[in-house]
Image (tube, rainbow, N blue to C red; front, side, top):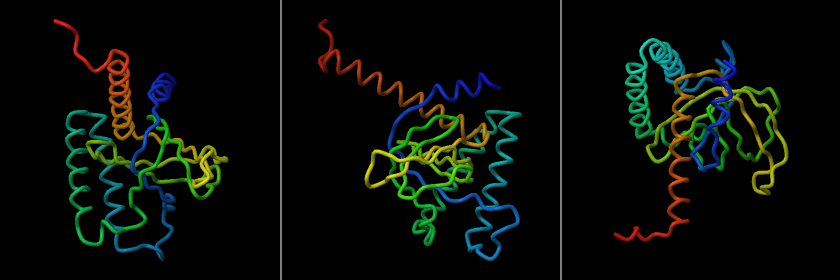
Length: 191
C-alpha cells in the first residue's frame, strides 16, 4: 500500500481547476438542515460506493458505470435550480493536486482534522470527481485575496483517485510537449 501512496504523491501538478468544497455531512446528523437536494446527494454517494465495488471486480464495467454517472451529473446540472446551487458551484481555483490529496487557497481557515467533501471538474473534458478528505494543514498563503492555504488528504476512493492521476499525467505530458516545442521553436524540422 505504501508504494501505491508514493505513486499517488509522485503524480502531482499545479493547475487551475473548478472546485467546490463543503463539510462532510455527519452520519445521521443534519436532518433538520436537509434540503431538497439531500436525497439526491445521498443516492449519488451510495451509487459512487457501488461503482467503486464494481470497479474493483471489473475495471472496464466500473469505468463505464462511472462515465454514465458523470453524464447524468452533467445533465442534472442543466436542470433549473441545480446550476444555481451555491453550495456546489465550481469556482476556478489554483490547486496543487495529486491522487492522494489537494492544496488550495481559501478565504477562510479550516481546522486541522475537519472533514470536507470536494468536487473537481477535470479540464478540458469536464470530468466531475467528488471525494471526501481530511484537512491536514491550514496555514497562511501568499495570496492576499485568499489568505489561507488548505491541504486536504483524500479518503481512499480508487476510482476517483485514478481519474485524478490520469488527469495529472496527461497534463504533465502536455506541459512537457509545450516546453519541448518552445525550446525547439515553432518551425518544423527541415526536410
